[in-house]
Length: 279
View 1 (tube, helix red, strand yellow):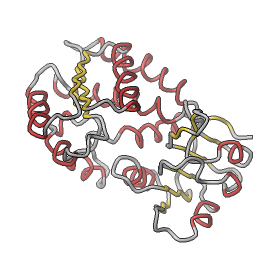
View 2 (view 1 turned 90 degrees about the vertical axis):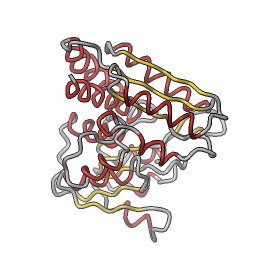
View 3 (view 1 turned 30 degrees about the vertical axis):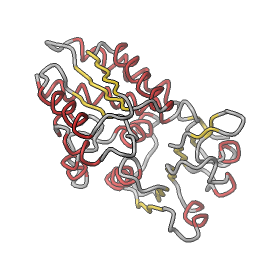
View 4 (view 1 turned 135 degrees about the vertical axis):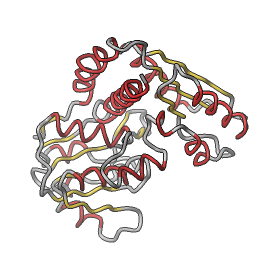
């Protein structure tokens, strides 16, 4: 039976044992601004959690909520004001945005030095060279989780399912930089099962409930499930068949309680880095 990669426990350890003490030593509190447009239920939950954790670690936290009909110009002005605000070290615009808004233009307008989500092209470009100032929070959280459990990566066969700019692409780069041989799979990949079956490290981020059967998992593999899906009965599940995979894997992340808490912990980590650099 697989051991759990407990994101809740590790995130608490990092937030309370590392981020909070370091933040208390600064001349002023690290400042995090979160912008939410519309009333997407999942986004509201995520933003609420981020604000709660920011308060617990002693950050100055600002939440800016705007209605769904907010224009591109209005949102651009909000970002511009936050860029210029000396009390704000980190800016996060919650995704997804309403369809009438150009998310790429918004993300590109964030000061790269305050881009604690790690999505600005300046940071993603530097990540490809192994020298990003800020790394996207979910992939960074996965790497911290693997490191915290002392899971060796060098020389391993890693498979990433999903190629989004938020998770898949930066995840693949981080694993490659850790010494893995990396394959990125996606909707056009032929014979996905064959790729999964040889993966010593498997990261799945496609947003499809239990899409990867447990029977595909290589015995002894490390399985990181980034997915968060809701079944018809209202319960949550990941992109991997957890029960089946647990019988074959050596390590596996639970859903919920695995990657999610680490994503928020890395947001606090990045905001602290920004505050230190700016002060």
